[in-house]
Amino acid sequence: MSVNGEDPLAIVEAELNEATDRARRMIEACDPRRFTVRPDPARWSAAECIAHLSVSSEMVLPVLREALEHGKRSGITGGRPPSMDLLGRVLRWFLEPPVRSRLKTAAPFVPRSVRAKAESLAEFSAFQSKLIEALKSARGLDLGKLKVVSPFDKRMKFNLYSAFRIVAAHERRHLWQAEQAIEALAKMHSPWPRTD
Image (spheres, rainbow, N blue to C red):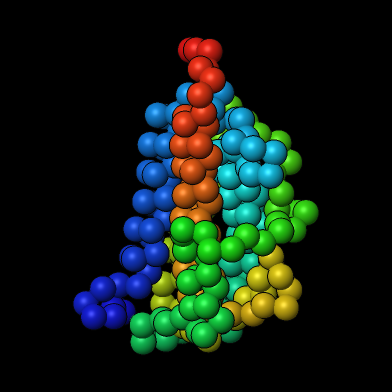
């Protein structure tokens, strides 16, 4: 199953792995205090961005798994390469960084707490492994026919392949936001006390 010689599911897996690597590089290089401090009261800290991604994965995984189970039970298989539907393409474009406009995050997806660097990375990485596991279990299913309702907005429905691509774009958006928060703090004039 490939498009122009590329396996669509392998592309998504590579995007998820790159997000994990990017988070690891950012978190390991960041001063512990800069990781948890907001650059200003209206913007999330890097820790909040990572926590939001973990909460989002926690909420989206049951939706993905339910669609996968439905596909397996119903025998919705297909040999053609999956493609995104129109809503999926629009949402993915909107989510890609740099951020074009901000939306208010629904309460269930607002980070409940922030964790120190090691715990934050461990939680994010664990959810990434679960997303990749779900992606691998999608092989052989017709991801264009299987539909999911967005856990972010119940009015939005798109195909399962779009859902995986949207998850990856959402991760890039908030990793970019986390990097911007760290950069903004680094540019502030007041020196940070060393914490390590």
